[in-house]
Structures are given as C-alpha cells and as structure tokens.
Image (cartoon, rainbow over all chains, first blue to last red; front, side, top):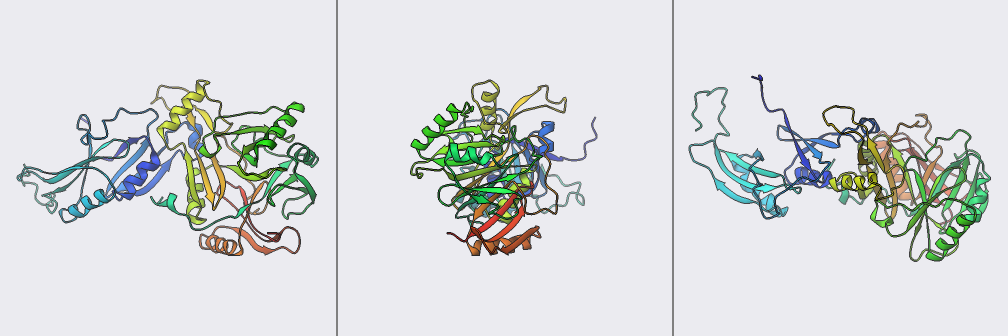
Amino acid sequence: MADVETLSHSGISVHDLKEAEDFYCGVLGAQVHGAVNFVTEDTLKGRSVHQSYTLGDFLFALVLAPDFMPMPPADKLMGVNGFRHAFAVRHADFDATLARLRSAGVPFKGPVGHPEKGPFGESVYFKDPSGNFLELLWRRDENVDYAKAPQLDVG
Amino acid sequence: MDASLDKQKTGLTAKALSHLVVEVNDLAVAGFYREVLGFAALGSDMIGNCGPSVALGAAEGGLLVLAKRDARPDLSATGVHQAYAVDKASRATIVATLKDRGIEVHTYKEDRPAEEADNFYFADPAGNRVQIVTRDGAAGGPPALDHAAVQVANMWWAEVFYTQTLGCAVEHRVGWKTADYARAQLWADGKEDMAPGTRRLDQRYSSIVNKKAMPRVNLQIYLRLGAVPFAVYLSNQHFQEPPEDLLAGTPRTGFAVTDKVLDDTARALDTARWPHQGPVAIGEGPIARALYFKDPGGNFIELAVRRDN
C-alpha cells in the first residue's frame, strides 16, 4: 500500500489556457501560482505548457491539452462519467457564489440537496469553458474539527 | 496575472512607430531599401545611441535606421522581423523588383488574424527578415512602418512587464490553445508553411511521453500600444542578450509618444525599479525627447517625442 498522506494537487486539462485562467481566476477566485514552459529553457526540453493556481488551499495546474479531448455537449452540465472536481464554499457564502456564477453567465444545475445525515449540504454542477465537470458545494460539517472529534459519524 | 489584463487599455499608448533601428554589416544596405522599397535617404547619424548609422524616410514620418555592426547574431531561424505597410499597387512593384533581383519571396500562413489576408517576406542583403503587409488606404510611394517583432527568453515575464508595468493591451495570443497545437501538426505534415520562429519540433526530455519530436507552436503575444502593434515571440533557442548596463543600443524599436506618455512611463519604470535611461532632451534631429530601456528579453525600446510631429 502506498502510504498516502493527502491529495497534493490536480491537473485540469483545458483547450484554451487564457480562457481557463479567466474562468478559474475571474469567476471562481483562483490566484496565480506559477507558470511552466513560458521560458526558452523549458521549450528546449519539450515541457508541456501549464500554469498553476491556488483556489482556497487547493493547488491545481491548468494544462494545455495537446490534443482535443472528447467533451460532453454544451447542454450536458454534469459531464459524461461523473469525474469532477468539487470545491467547498462556506454555507453563508453559497448564495453569493451562485449569484456570481449567474452574473458570469455560467449555466449550472441545482442547487441539489444532499441527505441531511451526510456531510454535504447543497451542490451545484457546471463546467469550465473547456467542458470539464465541476461542482461547488457547502458542507454541513464545515465547523467540525475532525482532529478533535474523530468519533463523529458523518454518515 | 489578473484576469482582466486583456481589457486593460490604459498606460503606454503610442501614436505610431517612430523608428526601427536595424543592424547591418554594411551601411550600403541603405541602397537596397531605397531602390526596392523607395525609402528616402535622409542622412547619417541622425538618431542617437545607434553607433554609425544612416536614416531612411518611410511614409507617415517613420524612420528606418540602419546601424552598422560587424558581429551580428543570426536571426534567420527566429521570429524577429520588421514589417512595412504598402498599398496594392506598391506591393506589385516591390514584388516585381525583388523578382528582377533574384531575391526569394516567401509567403507564409499567419498566426495573427490581422496579417492573414496578404503578406510576404524576404531578407535584406544583411539577412534581416522583412515583411510587407498590404493595407487599404496606405499611402502610395514608400511603405509606412507597420510593426516589429522581437523575441524573449521568458514569455511570462515579458507579458507581465508589457501589460502590468507598461500597461499595453494584448491583441492576440498564440500557443495558449489546443487548436494552436492542432495547427502545428498541419505545419509538421507539410500542409501549412509557417514563418521561421513560429513552430518547432519538441524534443521530449522525459520517457513519460513515448513520442519524439512533437510539433508545437511557439508562444507569441501581439501587443497593442494604442494603435501600434508589437509582436513578442518566445525564442526557441538560447540567444545572447546585450550587457546588463547597456540601456540604449541596437537593434531598437522606437515608438512615437506624447510628452505625457513618456513621463508617465518613466514614472512607471521608476515605481517598478526598472532600469531606464532618460528622459533626455535632444538638441537637434527629428527626436526632441527620448526614454530608453530594455524589455525582459533584452530588447531595446525607445519612447520618442518627435520634434517634427
């Protein structure tokens, strides 16, 4: 067994880096972290073009896909096979987040309620400009400190 | 990088290209520009910080300055070029003259939409790549200075400098899209002829991807300083930058600006602690005031307030 500590980062492949950056930074509030293959040295080594960002405490890279990826039709908001990234916002900020999606013209499905005994409150489902499936949710357990309450049943 | 960067229009706004300083091994190359493009001979050493040079008059007050330099880098495989705009009649004349002289003319597919319609390239006798673009409403007679293209070793830093420090707008970018990669494949397949410096074959350094020599597009951004386009390419090879303390050298791109833009830019460079020379007042010649600096790729830039505007 690999002794995994935690999720380190994700790479999200996109068809347009600039459009993706505008979306993840401008709509979701990500911050630029770094860039790779914007220098001659990288080019000489054949490194793929990507930029890294932080969204909350989550580190991810936007990677320019070298080939077109199959993506679901525009009106299919929940992807094809369910693979997604889900980002948590505070319950108190959830409505404001949805308003931000609406004003940015991002179509989404939901809010969809989750079982009350579970850790999740409500989710909305949408896609980035390249068609990657994303989810935003608030969590019922957002104030639970699991380190201090390891016995808690979150369902 | 801020998401609203491309919408930023304030900052460095040029009225036009004032002068392009191009290096040649022999100042007699001026004869080629006079005879083939119809530029007017204006005189020697008219523009400061060029070394021995001759100035040629383009349309709309633009100047082409040929600066003599014996040991010049070979830029033939790079994206570096100077572009001049002519009307359709002048275009035909130039093509015929080049043909008479046995000079090879290249027509490439273009990455920048504004140049797709009609353009061609050739090399001057010193090996500098020259592009001719056809512009409706361009004056007959000698061409006007249209744009310059330079190369940098760090595109990220270059974009931050031009957009955030100077406040230029990005008109177009190449290499940020999967579609650009698909187009690079067309080039590799021999279906699209692209200008040197715009494409490359990636030599993978890792065994993760079991593919060799993948066709790729070189990153390019097309900036706008007001109405003046300026192209920046990521170099696909190492190149020698000028000495760090040399701030006014050749080759150089000179933008014509107002006093206010020149002073605002000097202040912006001070704020960014970015080295610059000037503003300096110049006693005679076509330029009254100048500000010199280099971009992060070591490209010499001059902002000039023209005396004759």
